[in-house]
Amino acid sequence: MPESIAIGLAWFFAWLFGQAAYHKFSAPDYYRQLIHRYAAVLPASSAIVIGIALAEAAIALSLLFPEFRGAGLLVAAALLLMYAVLMGREILRGRAGAQCGCAGPGSQLGISWGLVVRNGVCAVLALLCLGTGGTADVGWLGLLLAGFVAIFTALVYLTAEQVMSNAQWMAEEA
Amino acid sequence: MDWLVVSNIVLWIGFIAMVLVNLALARQIGVLYERVAPAGALMMNQKLAVGAEAPVLAVNTLEGEALELGKTAGDKSQLLFFLSPDCPVCNELTPALKSAARAEADWLRVILASDGEEQDHQAYVERKGLQAFPYVVSELLGKTFGVSKLPYAVLIDEQGKIASMGIINSREHLDSLFEAKERKVASIQDYMNKRSAQQYVEADKA
Picture 1 (cartoon, rainbow over the protein chains, first blue to last red):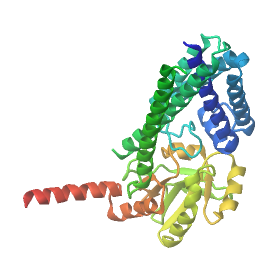
Picture 2: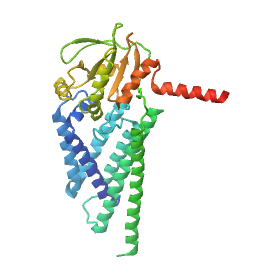
Picture 3: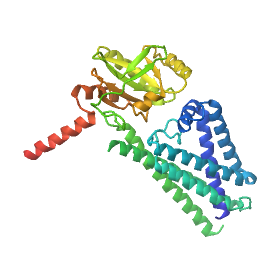
Picture 4: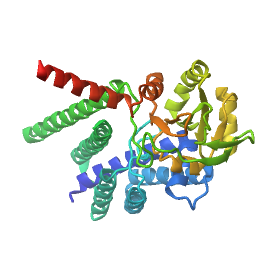
């Protein structure tokens, strides 16, 4: 994968995990219940929510620095896959449609196979970025391209999420 | 600067603008769905059916009162209202719920239900002034009644049968449950569908 695109995708993942951490820091009570619902073995404790939020914030920060980008991408892919597995397990338990918590406490987005696939695609993208060094000097034009790629990917991500949410509204009405 | 570079930058800007427009359109559809929600509450329940016997469950309220949910013994109907302190829509609905409970007090008993840590709910009850309602904290209750989205309400009639149920996003949705019970239909959507089918047949005959 070209270096500039890998950098752009890393910036996108930094935004994604930064946003996820922000949601958890701003609504710990909501995520406490949600995490307990996803994994009943874990106690409904604020410490777990803060721990996950700190891990996500650390991933977001590491993706902004070339020296730590590789490790950040690896952990990001692992976390995305873990979330996908947890959502898939909930669907198989017959709890499709329950709030997923992916887009913050204000979102009504329910767990669906679409979200599992989305997380899988994101994890594959993160792993593909690992193939490049991520430290080469790409020049200002390369950085500009990385910026475009980051904005484009974030917009596609948000659009996909909105389309899935709309589809759930339509399915409820049918 | 090379013209190719300039043209690439311009194309990227145009491309991102187009994706932004797509996002805005999708968002507008979402907002429209939220605004033009059906007048009746959406049922969305895979465990319960309207007209079936309600599950009977013995529970304790936060105050320690023993309750038998689903068992009305010919007394008042029960409205089980599932909510959560972390659910923004539930918080907005509490004044409407209090007002509906007052207006329908002669035939209806409103019971609030949630899950999680009891101390969180005690603080919530005080904050929102919900002391007048029995408040049950039980994960089993939500599972038994097939609740997957909040706020959700189940109306159990005087005979202990499910009269109506659905997601409640507004006072209108709440009233639609009472209306469905009164009209003896599964939901207001069901009533509207039957009515439009009837109108279609009549128009066809004419």
